[in-house]
Length: 331
Image 1: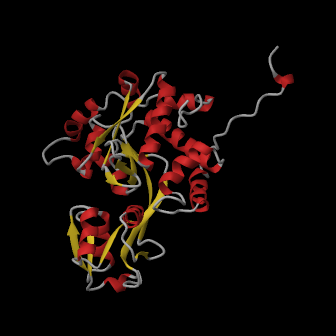
Image 2: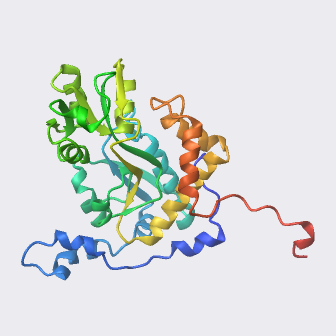
Image 3: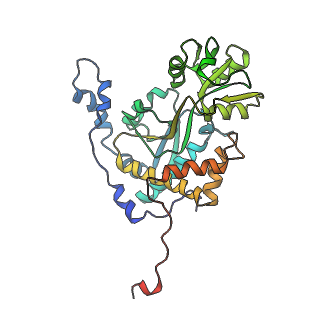
């Protein structure tokens, strides 16, 4: 049995599989072009989403994962062009949870997504089922749903050690690279209007601007910056400040108002996090490979455990029930 195959659904989870057909939330109203009624604008989306993810997976035997393949340790491609990373590991466990629920094998199929802005539309149209390793934002939450968090990250500055103290004041009149139209760009412009913003199309381009001297630092996601800096063999760089300029959870993004699928995705994530806390070898190895002490991020197991405990505080712990005593068994 593969290490990420879950045990059969507990009784309390069986009720979660039922599909609710809820109306789309108010956040989508801002997508309505002028002159169109709300119902007319949402009709194509509603028709595309008439089939839930669980229904579609039960019919096709396939779960479609999308995302940028240039975001290690969350998602990248190995030497054979296959997806790998922490986000992929989570998606595989969700696929395994679905396989138990629908009673048939479920294959995980990856499709690269070059335009992050198209993510919500792909999910709404039923052309994709999930993306894992996505920073939480309230703006995106208006049009998609988020799973339980799988990690914590934030915006920090990567620069030669000692060049900056990490304070907003220290960024004034310095050339700072950010990805164009990203959270990092808007945060930098508000954080320090006097900074010289060097907007580039990708995080890789931002790091190249730093290497070439076109920028003096890069502001971006802590996880992605740490991974690239350490795996790229660039020495003498440091992340500042100690506390990010802005923090956010990292999770899977799912279609809006598909509660049955969200329930199963959350159950799979809770199993993985609980497995890590319980010291299950498969769960520990799967997570440590990408974000643990021996990874490029070098997070300690204590740090990982502390965050996972926080995530699971509001849900039921998932552990095997103890065997019933012999006297309680039916004759």
